[in-house]
Length: 383
Image (cartoon, rainbow, N blue to C red; front, side, top):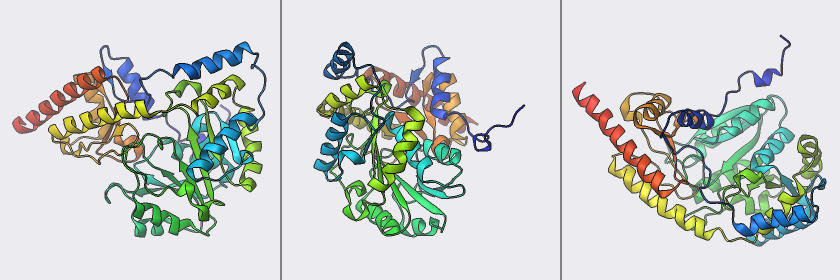
């Protein structure tokens, strides 16, 4: 056998996909695993792609993205306080490629990326591929908020970036003013990038708290990654964008061009229409589901951080004396309802439930989960 890139040796498949596949192999299983809206993409967005195809928009787009879409993104970002020009916008294959381009573009071998944990596992995967090192910052013991002293202790001369995801996957938590202030003070004026993964920014149920992607003092250190997938139900379209300072864009554009050449032209036409689409009706439905899920979990006697955005909830299941992977595997096999182990996000003793599925699936899944938990507690009582 010929040796491969050693940075790939320790990679594992996402547990989100692993447990979704296990659910797919279990007839009748309800999947509360993947964060994929159950809504269809709004018709106007689909029509824009169809019309673009009919106009012959099937050729290469510019590497950085079409001028119209980059201009619209710059206008949207500037309107919300992130003052950028269209030259500071890169259209990407979803936020995932944006994150990959950002981390691969800034990291040298051995440099470190601080990730509040529990957090999305992709950050560690990309950092490993880039030859860097992920430094988990455990927030599970501090109310799922960032502790200033712990953050300062995590920073070393090798720290290159902090990834900030708020609202957060997997908890739905929105970082507080105090958390944001701690991050700003930790990076301001230092050779440390702040990577803001804002994919759930439009899916929040609480008033806006300070957003460091809008902080003028951090603009030369800030890279924003955004996606059309979540707010506009466009997961399969694979389109997003990245904004960054001009000196960073000069290099990231070359990297992105080598990775993907460009996002398909007709997809960018659809994304342009999406920017003018109001996601509020979907958010209102998610909020109703959030309230329902939280009430059901409290009724089951489970504790969890109150989700303030996104469409996830992160209940604690450590009382049952098994790993989160064992719990989720048993729940699929015995109760036919699937969730994702907290260990996938760096937090053992929890599981992630996604509530962006149909109301009926949500009710059925939670009914089954409640019965499963009741049976586990009865086992403990009689064991």
